[in-house]
Amino acid sequence: MMPDLNEQVLVRIEKVKKMREAGLNPFRNDCVPSNTTADLHAKYGEKTREELGGVNDRISVAGRVMAVRDFGKGGFLRIQDRKGQIQLFMSKETLGQVFENYKQFTDLGDIVYAEGKPFRTKTNELSVHVSRYEILTKAVRPLPEKFHGLADVELRYRHRSLDLIMSEQVRKTFITRTKIIAAIRRFFDARDFLEVDTPMMHSIAGGAAAKPFRTHHNALGIDLHMRIAPELHLKRLVVGGFERVYEMNRLFRNEGISVKHNPEFTSIEFYLAYATYEELMSLTEELFQYLGKEVLAASKLTYQGTEIDLSGPWPRLSVAESIAKYSGFKDGSRMSDRAAIMKYLDSNGIPYEKKAATGALLMAIFDEEVENHLIQPTFITHYPTDVSPLSRRNERNPSIVDRFELFVYGREIANAFSELNDPVDQRLRFELQAEAKAGGDEEACDIDEDFLYALEHGMPPTAGEGIGIDRLVMLFTDSASIRDVILFPQMRPQKSAAPAV
Image 1 (cartoon, rainbow, N blue to C red):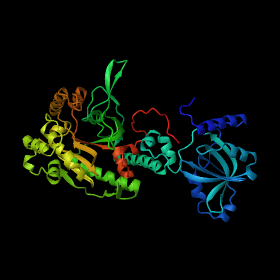
Image 2: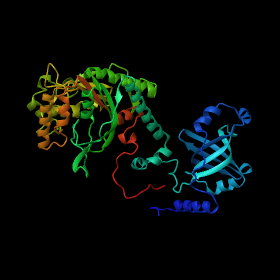
Image 3: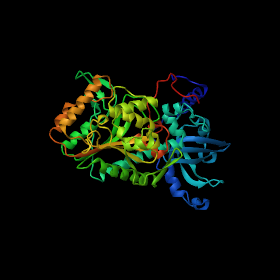
Image 4: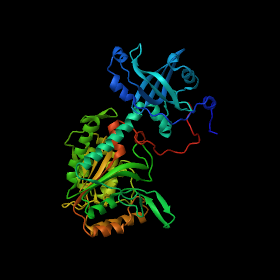
């Protein structure tokens, strides 16, 4: 028996019983529509009533009933399929006994099949004059009230199927997400990149600073981590001669949930041999402008009421320059002065870890006082070395690395750098990370001996980048929360199995 049965559900279950008693299958699977609603609007939408009167085409459609209007010996249904909606006209004169079945058994939310001819009603609406009608799936639970839909955002995320049924905007958001992902693949495929798949479970958590999820493999008797990044595997492929690779797939990080964070999210990482981080900045601009053209047919978009201009060139500021420009810590000569940084953090009430490296302390100022100023697309470059364990040191200043992050609307969208390919330096950086982890830093990397072994065979000079697909989709669909662009975001458990209707 279903949980939380209310009166409407019981009434519909009784209809299922009566349909079977009448010899009707409430869950049939023998009707295949030849048309979508979009097909009909495209083919007949411009024709007049008189022109449609001369059309003898037999059409068939199927979809979910979104509205019902009865008028004695006639009635109208509005059905919705994956492409849109269209109206069906039901006539007792045409349908006979089927009309009585329609009136007795059809409810909002049912999935139905109809055959007939296109025509226009007295209000000039393109419709289908139905000559055959079947209920394919009897919905035993009613849809939410149409006017309100699912107003509770928690219910929207938890019951995404209803959210998609009731909201055209939600459907458009996820269609746009699919278009963005397809366009990204076209962009990289056209530039001779090879799409690859690397493991989702790692014996060592590496490639990023993040707390991993842990699991256990019974047959091997070992603990594994859901991957926090594919970076170290992708760079092994570069060592192996795949000089242009990308992977678009899931990452898992055991962190909090917010409008910008979901523990399971989608990212693209790509690596380009014989390139620098500066070339990746140009490639990133090109990618975003390509997506604007392909997905939005525009070089500008509006996000949360703010116009974002994707046309370049985008500003480029170093971490030090951005802090000097946007925070109260103005003196560039003190950017490596640990005591001065800590004094500033204390005096401004900015939280930080006292044992953190100097670069991490500097980034605390950046996170608190700079990020929110980076509204238009902006590249922030030259991060401190001690917060960039996989990045190549800058030739002129080894305390910083050749790295950038892209910010839009105060949010990090991309992270990239010229890759560290010196295995000795890489081992030293891993050892420092291991020390930090031993000291309690759960986000620090482990020493990956397999990766070092590959690196010791020589990796060509390479630049790599990761872009958060979910945040990118948020930007392109004007979505306030990451949960608006993930079909099934992580939710807290609830006791009730279904929303009230």
